[in-house]
Image (tube, rainbow, N blue to C red; front, side, top):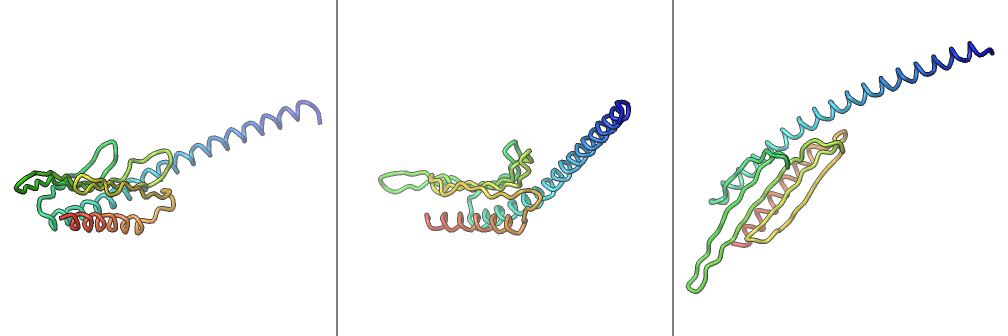
Length: 160
């Protein structure tokens, strides 16, 4: 094979490689956008579940205030209350709060639920539950939201 033919083949290989890289980049962009879309869809569904769950709890325990959370930490909600107990010799205060959030989309491509619970000034738990976006199981996230809310309710009811 003479040099001219080898040069032509090298140019063709380079062009094919360039086209393949461009296609891979387009596929990666499409996948990234699809993962972002999935995260948004899941976040909306789960944050609505969190809101329903926490509002229901605030109705069961008078004095709890519900607040929606939408900030750089994520989307979700929290319930909290301050208690004041007085007896003849002393006065004590107690702060209780349950917070649940879906973390924002990140380059790690995970769906993450985080929760923090405090009952009467004492942290009861601080947990995280996550799955890769591509294989996220919303049923397990819904169950986790319910379980953590029920655990908080039990802990709070036991302190009163």
